[in-house]
Every structure is written in C-alpha cells, then in structure tokens.
View (tube, rainbow, N blue to C red):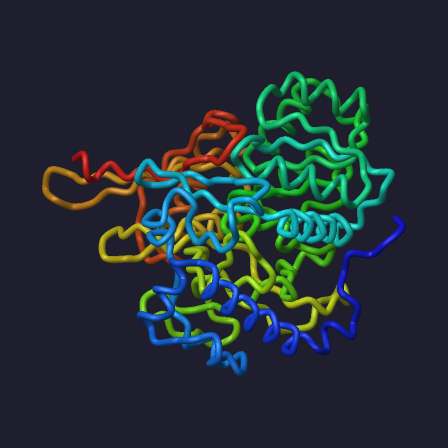
Length: 431
C-alpha cells in the first residue's frame, strides 16, 4: 500500500479546530446556496455568523427525513445542477425515495473515507474483495467498489443475489474478503458448509453493513469459515453511504471519521444531548459535503459514544454498534422494546442459533401475545428443548421484563435472505 488514508496524529490534536472550520463552511455554504436551508435557518433566526464555537452547533435546527420528502426530488441541494455528477437514493416510507446529490468532490471524499475503512481492517493491495451488496441507486455497491479501487485492492463486483455464482467465484478467484449484509453472509456460509467448500477457500475477513446483527450470527459465520476478523461498517445514504466508519481489529465499537462529520447523541424524545456513554439517537452534521450538506440530521439510529481509548491505538473517536432505530421500537404490555435487546438476550444463551422472529398478536380478550420463534442447535431431546425454552423465557422476563411464548424450531427453518432480514412482525393492527 503506497499511501495512508488515515489522518495524521496532529490532525487529531487539532480536531476541534478542524470541525469548527468545517461547521462554519457548511452553514455558510448551505445558507447561501440552498433555498431549503436558507428558509430553515431564517425561520430559526440563525445565521452563519453565529457559528463562533462548536457549542453554537446547538443553535442550529434539526433536519429530518420529512424534510427530504418535502424537498423532493433534489432535497437539500446546495450546488448548481451542472456540478452534480451522481445521485443515489434510499427507500422512502411514503413512496418517494430519499434522493441525494453528489459533486465530484463528494465522490472523491467518499472514496477516501471508504479506503480508510479497508486500511483500518488491515487489508492490503493483494486482497481480493468480493462485493455482495446492491448496485444501482443504492449507495452500497458503488461505495464498496469505489473504496476498493481507491485503496488498490482487487474488486469482484457480484452484487447480492446468486449464491451459486458467489460460491464459484470465492473458490475460483480465491477471494479473501466478503462484503455483504450480515444476513447475506449467513446465507453464504451455510451454503459453503453444505457444499464442503471451506478448505478450498481463502476467506479471511467479512465486512457487514446495512443491518444490525447479533453476536450469535458472527460466531456462526466465524465457526463455519474460520475467518480471522468480522467488521461492522455503518452506512447511511444521506451521509455519503457506507464507509463513514468501521469497527477495528480490537472489535470494541466503530471508529467514525470525525474529520468529515460531527456526531451528536441526543435523547430522541427531548432532543437534548445525553451523557457520554448513554444510549441515544445519532445526529450528524457534515463538514465538507457540497451536493447535499446535512445540518443536525436525525438518523434515527441508536447508539452511544465510547469515550475510553481504543486498544487498537487509533485516535479517531468511536461509537457503539448500531443498537436499532428509534422508530423500530415496539411496545408490548407497556414495555418499550428494541430489537437489539432481543439480540442481546439470545446471544447469551447456549444452544440457540442466530436467527429468530418475533410475532405480536392481540387476543380476543384484548391482551397482547408475543411469540418468539428461535432456532436451536444440536438437540433432539424433548427435555433439553423444554429446558431451553424455559431459559429463554426466563431471560426475557429478567432482562426485558416481558414473558413471551417461545417456539423452538430446527436450525435452518427460518428464512435466510441476501438483503436485510425482517424479524419483528406486528399483527396487532390486523387483529
């Protein structure tokens, strides 16, 4: 590898000054070039001249997904159309996608950030990176390939579908890194196990994006393939796409690129900052983005800042793995529950697989019923199954304060997918 994409230590010492410079530029750029932001800032009685310190960030109004829908089809645009070289989009909840604009500088910055991810994962130019994420309007495939080419490793751009082709290329091309959703990775490694391919492959690392995953799923993937490292990569279309941070080899949280954006953690109800280390909603403000800058954008992703120094030695700040989304929460018998809590409980119980489903129903008497379907590993004893179901029920009661009905199913029974897995099914509205 001929160059490093990491900031030098001196940049980290001057990070607050660098962030303030970027904040001033972003607010000025947005105010002067985006009619949407000019109105939003004027309505909040905030001007670019008020940005004198990082504390002034709290003067700025929040931006939301509703703002992107209202400003469709080119929301937040802050450059002339002649400077836009690409658009990407994510799915929308009302039929309209969230479309984001990119200038050539935005693309170049994104490539550098993504190359930094591969450097943090300790790849080399000799690695062969098989990409199994979506291409097209989505940011995932384009981002992984862009970063791979900027970094200098070999890209194998297959996309998410066709396990047959993936298995063949993993063996024939001797790919060393596999990039996908965690669900796709599980689907692939179980196919590798079924085919008895492990000893004919050179897979050493996995990079997961686009969905939360459990420790059980990671353990299963590592057991089948013998991979050295599995990395979590955050991804948000509004914030370039995947590549804005990565889990390092210490596997203790995600380093994020604080020289490209400011990360706040706020209480999703009060919108006030939480205490460092407390779980809250991620809010991001870009420092260099030209096409569609973000000012205090509410991501809805839940995480926490990790303030302790990282064992890997990197000085870039960290946040925890994404624990869920504030709008993913469901209420069962007056208890607020996030899917990440269920992941955590099941990951602690031996004999349980990585896949599960939660089904919510409303009974005739008006009471709610929760049915948790869980895959079990290696038992055909009725007594063992009963004990496992009782342990799961007990841990739900102890850690989440609810009592579900547990249904154990054979390993591999629950559906696998090459995209994001749906695990919570709320049937109460229909009932």
